[in-house]
Image (tube, rainbow, N blue to C red; front, side, top):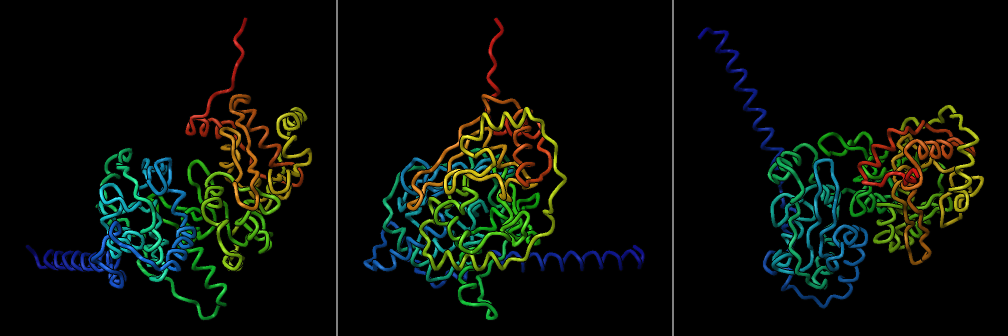
Length: 438
């Protein structure tokens, strides 16, 4: 071997060694559970009892903030799991998180519980980030202890779940998530910003921690990691689209007042838009229970997020009088002849940034499968929208949406029949009903 080849070999070996060391350091950072050392590691959840009623009450509130019941309650008993979570890599089913020792988390100690919630390390190995431990890692020790106290009061449910039964190989190999964590998991708590108010810091804690808002409202890369440069700039969830929550006045919440944000999270409507889909679930199970102070803190923080780029009005599309008539016949009874909607019940189309969004997923979904507004204590009449899949073909649905998106001051990109057809297929929506020829 020549001297040059030896030098090249030494350089390659040195690079490999350095990369290996860096990888090991990064791996240790992501699997380090030393934060959980504050928790008890002797008593399991099924055996844990407490008479600290204040801790239990606070823990229930933490559960509401984390929106645990929305994903872990699916007709199999409270927190019994089985909720179908659709991901680009296959379907996952939420776990049973009741204190049942055989099929739930009853054999977890408090330390195990901390590791699962904050570090994504569960009874069966690494958890999938569909369980947003990437956000829950920001939760404080106090909130975690209170949450533990609350879960000790949940009734055990015997319901065994194969969480990855519909997850194809290799995505059903949990060990692969160690590599995912190395790439995308920031295993650290949330530090206070001394330059901001206590209200702003509380809002950031709720939004980035238990509320895990960016899990839906930020774009994701091909491996499912959040694109940090697109923080809160909107994310496609497949069947739904979580809109931009930055201060962008065209496609974000720049034109919303703090009071409108609070109203939306408390009641499901800001007076213009009405929550449906996954957001309606979040409001029903989570945000309607927030204190006014916490809702104000969230509004304060959200309004401080820098505006995303783009979103300026598009050239207005021309629509035919025939489509206008179709809108009047099919839509105006609820949404109004001028797109004014019914305040607090039916979304307005005029002056509604969601209607103009470049991604029309939510609108197509609502037309094909129908939608239901959030049911809250302050707005108990949750209006519903029927499916029009049986009544309109792909082009007819696209035409109506283009009319809505280009009327009353709206201007938006064209919705195509191909987009409707693709979503009709992915949602399993029926085709337009046809009358057999005589």
